[in-house]
Length: 291
Image: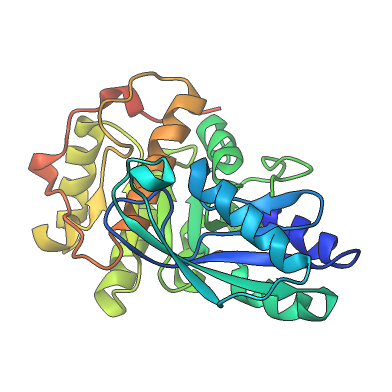
């Protein structure tokens, strides 16, 4: 998003040649949709670096100098180009100026996925900072007053909700929910509200609960007592965070959880493999730290 803002600001002063990855085959440094804007002096963004980027910059500057060319060019990433990726990239070239700002703002804005973070403790604060530059739009929810920073990172929306679980019905469809409030009682109510919403609408992309295997076993028993089935409970991921990342520091936990959310974006078009309660990995190092 920062690159897009720099581009739009730059176009108000000078035209640029927009270079976009239109399509790819095989192994390539960047996927379709990546872009860079080349000005007579300077550039914004990247299509992956290396020789292909150097050639694309030279081609873009020729076009800024008035040289005509095809709207799309094919680059094979082999020895002739000085790269060993082995794939093929089709690059689009288009001259853009101040008149294109509105269109580019809409066209190049990265897809952002809603995340609802329940809990303003140490891990919650670390997560808000880590998620700010990533392709997520964060709603940060807590039942207490005075827990949010005076200047939240990025465009985070802070929301006070008491009781905290009453915010669940109003979450954006497709939300990825992270539950890490200051109390287990609140955590349980938020998870139960999420499962009720899943039963009625099935539109939450991810439900993650911070804690240990023991915490989840206790929660699962209580939720079953409320009538939730093992199949429904399998929609909850607990512990959260990619495996193999050790450490109890809030920043370490935040990185592990953010990486897991990025995996859900990557796998969005494939059926998500959920963990049954008895299959949860042992990540007791991710036990919630309360303020």
